[in-house]
Length: 217
Image 1 (cartoon, rainbow, N blue to C red):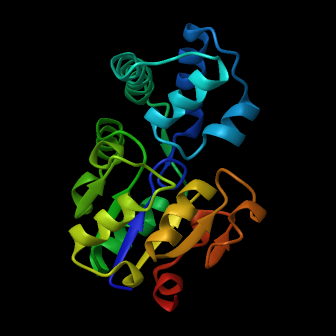
Image 2 (image 1 turned 180 degrees about the horizontal axis):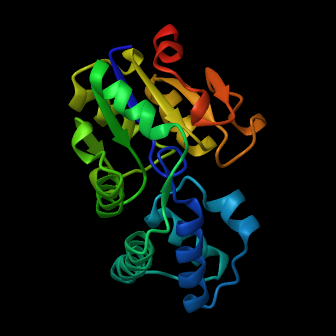
């Protein structure tokens, strides 16, 4: 392992509930019925652009690019408000793992979230300066499950994808990482172990992940 890459929402930050509340609020503004089951089965793991394309399709709406951008901005403002209110916490064990890993090898983030959200949260966690690179939905045309983000992250780190390990919490992210050629630890913060079964290792919590475990991959 020459580098370690972290997904963000659902791996570092326990932020999926915040995103779900913001998305539900925007869906209500659009007049589209939206449930927790919709979030878990159709949305989790997608970036904001694809999220609202799916919701528009659910409601039979046509969103021109300018309107889509407005909707994404509205959702992000709701999320940032909740971040600033301290509603996003780190998963137990993750901060320890990030600090230990950063002392041993290059680490990065590859996420479908917006850069402003990621940097705001990492700054609150006092982790921002530990990451060599942060690749977000803002940096790629196609977000997860497309592998472009992971390929870009490995390139920025200067290592082959096959020499990278990543930690993911959704099937969407798992597909992206595997398609890019990375080894994957699936952590069941968001979905069941069965849904992450294609990962090289599956754990229930980031508290179970150690640097020695990752090196052994």
